[in-house]
Image (cartoon, rainbow, N blue to C red):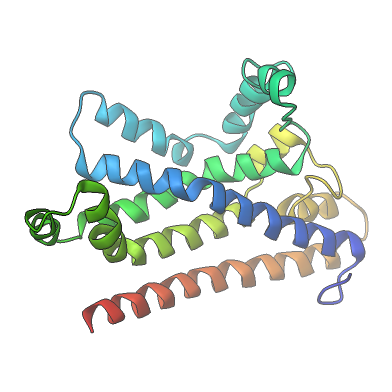
Amino acid sequence: MSWFGLTPVESEALRLSLWVSGWAVAVSLPFGVLAAWVLARLKFPGKSALDGLIHLPLVLPPVVVGYLLLVLLGSRGMLGAWLHRVFGITFIFTWKGAALASAVMAFPLLVRAVRLSIENVDRGLEAAARTLGAGPLRVFFTVTLPLMVPGVIAGAILAFARSLGEFGATITFVSNIQGETQTLPLALYTLTQVPGGEWAAMRLCGIAIVLGLAALVASEILARRYAARLEG
């Protein structure tokens, strides 16, 4: 199938990017909400270290993150060899590895957006629910979570947009394999190295810009609409 007049190779790269980004957000979202809640609501020794670790991908070169994933989850990595031997799970040179690399790079943005949303939740409402007999889990799912949904939406879409643009960690961890790990940024990079690939690269560049802007606009619109519904 060819989209927007793209060649089959370019269309495959676009399809794979959407697939990888979707899985990256779906897998990381529950962990992101949990991490954001822990950082926003709990006090414990080492909290600053955990906060720094979660946000480390924001300041590390993506290639470093990809190399660390390769060392840990490669075919001979400390965890990768065990996962392959026991469960038959392989991340290296697969789209699953590309999704994992994208999720790691986008995770800090997801956590930050959700954390800000949690910190803006009126804790008096949670206290009122507890005085009425609601347990911690019920308070979270019936009071806290609905109020933090705008932040969850914004964080998920920002993470999706960041995953669409992931390059360094992906190419380091899972290489640039057409039809398997060659996402939109990797395909664009490949086209810039091929004589006569300038126009195809320009098409992919334009699509990447449109997708990124659409994700940011959608994040803002959905968050505002949900916030308006809550106020109503």
